[in-house]
Image 1 (spheres, rainbow, N blue to C red):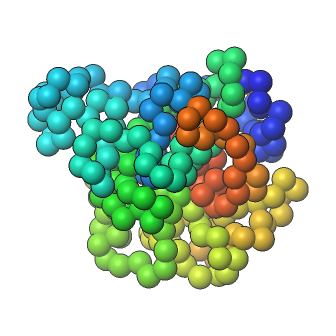
Image 2: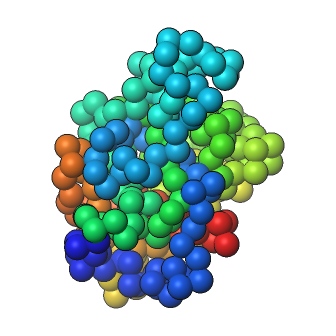
Length: 256
């Protein structure tokens, strides 16, 4: 991965040492509930968890209520194309978690062999986020990343988390928020969710990151170099990046 030198976080989280023990498993799936993905990005296309029980032929072959959801689902447009429209936030997040690693191009990710399930949950505000968590849990995600949220959690959101966690045995990982405050941010603030704060390269809290007793783990979140739409790459900062770094790591642990 020729751009790994731009990924300070890989060494910081000791991914190299982890990969000496396990490089993950293609049966472990990370659900990326976000703005969508770049379905033909050269550093992602080989990482998607394809649903071979429902090939694209106009029929709902697996009778799950989603026709031709071979490569994920778009909840906003209710179709089988999770390609980004507008913000490529979800493409960047996927590349933080588990891009194709050791493939001679682009970047690496903690998840290594672990697969990605693309769930487009809407535009930048992720209006279908909780539906996306449910979809990912129902379609085999072992870890579900949520690099989005806001204040004011409610019972419906907790019910969704309970379902994904208790009923479907999925770990929900979520961004702590970028307000630099101790305020709760949801879904990160719900019970059972791994609430991820963001750090700098020197292991200090990133200025933007929320903090407090409710944080479960911190992960690199400042200037994280990863995939972008159209086969591109760029650096981005936020707990939106810290969360998938943690999610990829969690998938690696789950594989082990």
